Length: 376
Image (tube, rainbow, N blue to C red; front, side, top):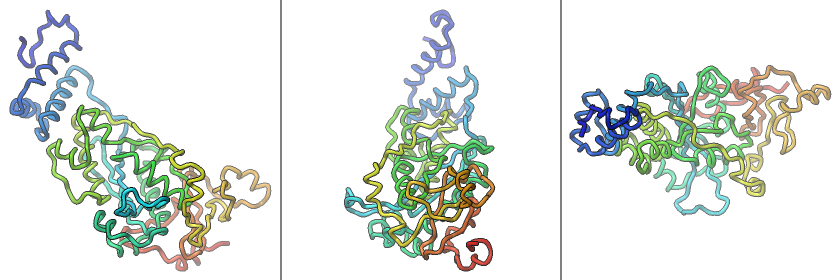
């Protein structure tokens, strides 16, 4: 039998696929100590369980006979929301989980490292008082959400952060979003957009579920974040159910996948039918909190089915009910409601909303009335 690294070309019929299969069979018989030695010779990571090490070595041997894998995206943005919750499982009927922590961790695929982060807490409106269970699970204090901006403002800040780095769709840089479950976008963000009267963003229509990718690439059970880290021989940093800590740990897993030659691509997509029309009618909205929806294009309120007059600009121009503004492609997918004081924020675009500090409170609307937010 040919030893590792040697090929019997007579028996393999000069087939590269047969060569690869023989090499995989040999690697499968290697003990953990041999795997560590072979990976060390190739200057590859030796952390992880035996199953992970075998996959890493197989991938390296396969790449030696093929072109180096080129990722399709320049940047990866990891998101892991935290939301209000109760100890009861399942929660009471029609209980709405509001996002209370919004983190984004940005990875440069070429550099294979974290290069930037966005983080902000969000003040819940429907359930403003966090349950003891929620505070214990997420380690978020009541004071932190009390002083935080409402979700609509955090969402505007997040889009501005993405826009400044040219990471939104149709912009210069190609960015793919990453989560560890379908719930972050299909459940939490979708529900939050419904209750806040924000159109679901285009950039969150497809993403990578890292658990699915991890399981398929390493041919193993992914489990939760801690389990994936343990299989890779990495320690958990921070605390579970802390949005920023979870996002950073997911980023560490993603980086290991990139190093091991995994080609990352979207594997989950947004389903707008997650909640049907009747369920949406029963969802509490910011209108129930003495607030109204304001169109960003003309600063007027429209019907429930018409959140913006952008699609009806020509008609509004003829009627003289629409103010002119410069069209911004990245801002037409998101709209913002007024703040909880009942004072309309006359902002032409989410991208012009002032960027808030994660620890700062909601900006004083009256302070800006004389400058840019006053309704003419």
